[in-house]
Image 1: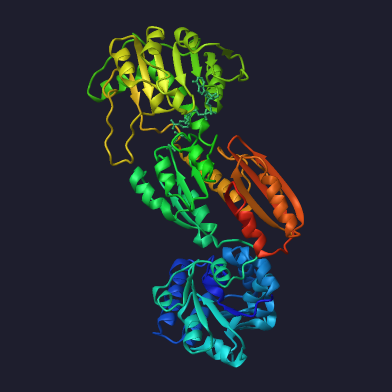
Image 2: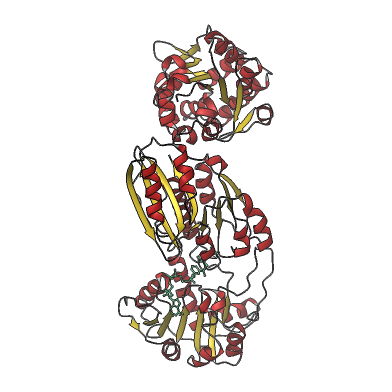
Amino acid sequence: MPQTKKFIIDFDSTFTQVEALDILGEISLINDPEKVKKLQSIKDITDKGMEGSITFRESLELRLEILKASKTQITDLIAALRQKVSKSFERNKEWLQENAKDIYIISNGFKDFILPIVSEYGILKENVFANEFVYDEAGNIVDFNRENPLSKNNGKTETIKNVNLEGDIYVIGDGYTDYEIKASGLANKFYAFTENVSRPKVVSRADHIAPSFDEILYINKLNTKFSYPKSRIKVLLLENVHPIGIHLLQEEGYEVEVISSALSEEELREKIKTVSILGIRSKTNVTKKVLENANRLLAIGAFCIGTNQIDLEECERKGIAVFNAPFSNTRSVVEMAIAEIIFLMRRLQDKSVGMHVGIWDKSASGSFEIRGKKLGIVGYGNIGAQLSVLAENMGMNVFYYDVIEKLALGNATKVDSLDELVSTCDIISLHVDGRKENRHLMDRERIGKMKPGAILINLSRGHVVEIPALRDAILSGHLGGSAVDVFPEEPKNNKESFESELKGLPNTILTPHIGGSTLEAQENIARFVPGKIMEYINTGNTYNSVNFPNIQLPFLHDAHRLIHIHHNEPGVLAKINQVLASFNINIVGQYLKTNEKIGYVITDIDKVYKAEAIEALKTIPGTIRFRTLY
Ligand SMILES: NC(=O)c1ccc[n+]([C@@H]2O[C@H](COP(=O)([O-])OP(=O)(O)OC[C@H]3O[C@@H](n4cnc5c(N)ncnc54)[C@H](O)[C@@H]3O)[C@@H](O)[C@H]2O)c1
Ligand SMILES: O=C(O)[C@H](O)COP(=O)(O)O
């Protein structure tokens, strides 16, 4: 059924993210030595106009006087504004085009730049109400059309009155003058649009606060492209995720809450109730108890490599997809391992600590080159394999042990048992994953098998090494040194103090789990993980998910996508297709992948179907989760 509502949309800070005259100032004043001062004056005058301490017309005159802009600069402004259309309008371009006859733009800005922008979204020229510049022969802006009611106070209300619109009229804007249209009885509802700015005076008078255009379409049951407004998707980011990650998720339109530390099980159990996307790093444990309350949770992003802190099986059972950044910080860990090998072989740690307290200990005793030494890598995955390459380039003889068959890089030698590796190498570096079975992989007995004077490095997970055994081995002199970055118990944040039996041991480097903490790695991770999550939410793609069957899907064209997650039991796919057939729904494409526990079926269907079909699909026995993408 065609929609019958009419939408009046403001331009500055609503249809676009910015105030166009501010951007024009950046362009026209680019070479002006007083640019900063003048731009500030423009902002102050805009505010005065909004507060009513000067008339709107005065504010316009004063700003144009400062701007001294020309026609060619308007062309530059249009190019800049094109990049600044509010994300939710951009997302709903198709909807705007399809409903153009019911969309009106009303603005105290200028048609000269508004028309070229909004016409790309199908908005009709006759539905755009705004001011007009007056140019001189040389193309300089010298005035504005003073007859236009929009150049005066109450201009928006006046204009709408003259247009005499019929039907349900909804106003969308960020400013008080937008609210005034509704206040004067010319509209049924006023939506305070807060995607770009939120003004308390305006928000307090709104019928609805709309963090995005999706929200307005959703509450009016008009959305055809996205099943759920992104502004209603709550994201919780813990543990100091890099600002780029926060920005990307905000830019996508999600409501993002950021907490710098990890949360305890109890705290997270409470918080998770309203969260749709959770972002964590290595210190937040997402346990079964936490997941009991995670009924809205669609996805977890581990902004790190390890996912042992997440109950992956329970996530799978609840239909929660988990993503990580499997190689964004690999290089950082490897560089740190190389540095520590050299540090420990030269006893640099102790020498430096000594110097700081006045000890001059110049001697070669206990100091060795790394060239020709045997490096034993336990766990030849992404990090182990890269360490192998770099270490070999520095002249080390590399040996490795892995529980699965791995290609030996360069001249590295595969060793068939861990005991053989630990008993023959000068340096043992641990790079196994954090699975439970790896608890105390390096226990007292195995540490005892290491070569006298050998060095143990653990940058993998804290539970892999039996800490009291390591302490005893160093104190007894059996081991020559150690570097430990990960601990069985780690502080939740930088305020909590660190306790360990390893404190104060000789030739022992202790670091606060910073193997992956470089700016490069954190930035890479912060770009990678949100990208994966957004792809999953927007298209259903699970490629790179750590617990879901991996499917790389084609783009959705002229179809609706049904996403069905179910327990892997016989006959579910058949039942899905029976339901679709019984409702006469045409399947455009279908993709299925299963793992031991769950099945993931994506069905693209023709756009026309009965809502009852969706209800029937949701109730198929074995269904864990069902969602539709438009
Ligand atoms: N310190 C840090 O800040 C930091 C940063 C990144 C990664 N990590 C940790 O480093 C470890 C390695 O990361 P990755 O990206 O190389 O992981 P990966 O999954 O690519 O490699 C792990 C390898 O260990 C092997 N393995 C598992 N258990 C083993 C065992 N008992 N014996 C021998 N091999 C075993 C696996 O088969 C796999 O090849 C992970 O524990 C990760 O969490 C720590
Ligand atoms: O798994 C990882 O990538 C590392 O342990 C780093 O974790 P972090 O992001 O908590 O520093």
